[in-house]
Length: 229
Image (cartoon, rainbow, N blue to C red; front, side, top):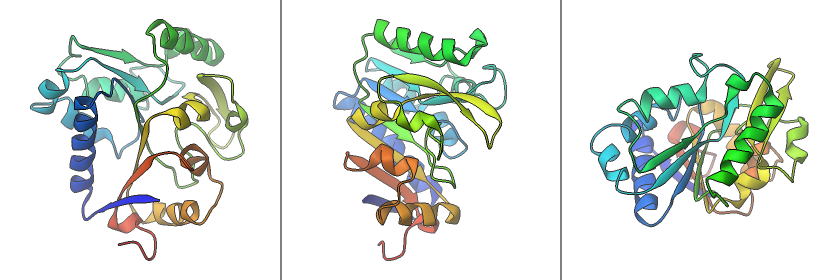
């Protein structure tokens, strides 16, 4: 595993911000972002000076990795959170945003509409995808034991997550795996056993999405597996 261990969450987020800017400077044009509490302050950094102006120099399409099936103004909406952080000062003229359109009120229709827009924007693959990781080893909306893990012929799909009693829409595992680079952000002691499991060959969804493809794990000391330095 390509582990990058930071003493504090602030250091981790600053490194993630630098990495995204550097990737944009070196040609990354499609960047997919995950929701959750960990990356929220990162998106606020990217949406404020000086990073907002630096990123505006490049034509970037920001893409939502997955979404809870709620309206965009709902507190749990990933796209809504990004609008309030990354785009709080408006979206730069050089940038585009591809969310899941939950206003269609049909998860399957939302996934199809996302795929149609992906193609209309001329996207062929992701340059960078920012991923999180749940305490159960899920990433995006790829949850253990759900049929979405077996979807190989879609860009995006809907999935019902029984333990959450909720529909979600998500990029599929092949799309995550075909990205040029994956950045996994993980903090806290609860993530440590999952990271150790991935290192030791466990088949968590996060492992399936990152195994044998270029992935940087940006983690804090509490999440660091035994023996890591």
